[in-house]
Amino acid sequence: MENLIKPIRVMSSRHSAFYTPLLLAVELGSTDQSFMKSVSEDFECSYTVAENNENVYEKVFNNEIDIAQSSVSGSWNNKYSKDIVHFGEINKMDGFHLVERSDVESQEAFSQDAFNWELLNEKEVLLDHSAQPLNMFKYACLKKNIDFDKLKIIDAGSPEEMVKSFREGNGDLIHLQAPQSVDLTYDLYDEKGINIVRPKVGKIIEQIGKIIGPLSFSTLICKREYLETREYHKFIEIFHTTKLFAQTQDPSKISEIIFEFFPDTDVEALEKTISIYQKLNCWNGEVNISEDHYDTTLEVFRNNGVEGIFPFSEIVHHH
Image 1 (cartoon, rainbow, N blue to C red):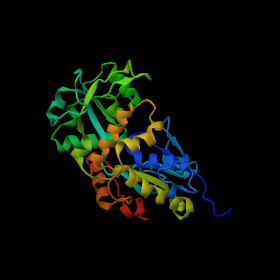
Image 2: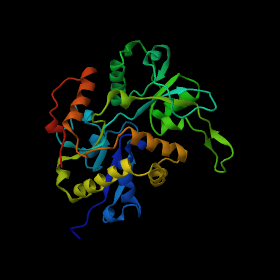
Image 3: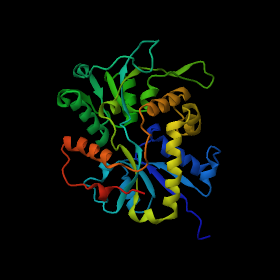
Image 4: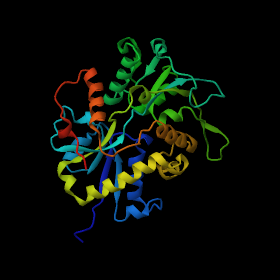
């Protein structure tokens, strides 16, 4: 009995298909999935999403959860960082989109034209004000020679509140992760597929990740002492496999597996989401966090005033 692997408690700081490699691992640990039975034996995993400003670092520190989705930037100037380590990279690109309001019935989900960032000076933008998305957007503006401080920015609250506000007619552009960004570009029909219950209202005109390039965007954290457990080593084995699966398998196959996580998303929109992130190469590459990616993320935050010394070797663990 001593050799049994204990159930692994996972918490995500934000729920999105952007974290598909993690969701695939969770799915393997919570159901009898046939897509990877060979590696999922003795693997059990639960999944929750942080709510009401829950601090995933505090949750990990207090042993309320074992592993959390976060970002290396979350450990800078964080009182829990001495006891917590980043051990895996989920995404190496920013996964946020700019969606433009559009009433064209025949529109494509994606604009075929290159976005002129100068147009931001004339638009109202519903912007995600969480620390990392906001800092990344500001950095993209810098790269495009746009003065962020002169833009008409709207803070509508959470992503759900942002979408609600945008659908009510506020703002010209909205800044979201997928599938929420893609949802805005698809009509959602009723169960019979006859009546539209949620109409499309826009099209994706830009991917922030394409502007900034590779960096350490979202990661996995645990307590340092957890690195010595059988559970950690089993999770890493699973995550290596699911990250490769997410990048290489057909989007329709992946969306079928994780669809239960997104009950309010059209199945085609979820497939499109997976395809977008695969083409962006979000999940391509090592599970280990590279120092180059780490340094680029630090550069983004330095540009926005973050001060302090944050050695890579003290923040990141390589397995």
